[in-house]
Image (cartoon, rainbow, N blue to C red; front, side, top):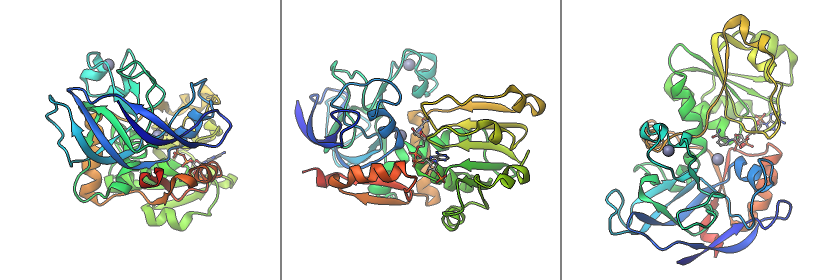
Length: 347
Ligand code: NAP
Ligand code: ZN
Ligand code: ZN
């Protein structure tokens, strides 16, 4: 076993603090990664604060991991020491169920192993990427293409794939009207990706505060949801709406913005229910759906797409002792547009 320096939670309410985590020995199929950067996802906050259910502490969050391979097990064929690699929200799955066979390990039927807060191969609780090192089975490690710096690659491992997957699945592309609700970590990636796929992109944000940014990121239109006329003006407009909001919103108001056969895909994961009035759906055969991250194969495809199209998130690098402040800023919708931890500061 090896000991990694980390930053984690000891309770749902106290600030994160320095601690150490044990990583399992590098098994035949394992890769030891020196973590260089880890993004801060709003899911880290929901999880640690117990909003999605009780968890065990201490917990080290972080599932937007970018680093360099430091060692490989004897049977590893797909990665070598020195490779630039990434790990996202999952570190294992059953590999046998219909979802896994389809490359959609995020929907593994018996349940996959999450990067933090799951039971890992060694029977202990998995601990995430706010840490200096991690050991992961080779099939759940992806390659960071040349041309993508490691610091900006990190947020692609969750924010990137979580928006890429539904945009692909629901066919964002030329001639399609796509709206993105919430311009945070996921939202700004959705705008960049949908624009690169050729869709006409509209941002629906709480205010017009970030309008210049939104247009610069690739949006064609930008509207404030605090302005009631937005919902009148855009009624029936969109083929696809990606809702990235981390809090409860009036989902029926947004469903009213869908065209015939349009779909509203919720990737935001507030703990509160989002009650749907069926009459928001029936008259235009609208769909209300959810989507969770993406499979390993699709994650690699997304990274390659980003490298090819010169797409990278806008990040603010933070040191370990700035993580608690960064969390507060995420909660205040004051993120532009993803915080990334420089793990060299973990000691
Ligand atoms: P984030 O950076 O905090 O962005 C969320 C954005 O939502 C904010 O920037 C803000 O945008 C808007 N917002 C926040 N509070 C709001 C409120 N009360 N009313 C209306 N709008 C509000 O968070 P994130 O990291 O992108 O994550 C977003 C959500 O997706 C979280 O719930 C997270 O857990 C979830 N998530 C899901 C998956 C998945 O697989 N489905 C993966 C990753 C994350 P504006 O300021 O522009 O309004
Ligand atoms: Zn995430
Ligand atoms: Zn499976």
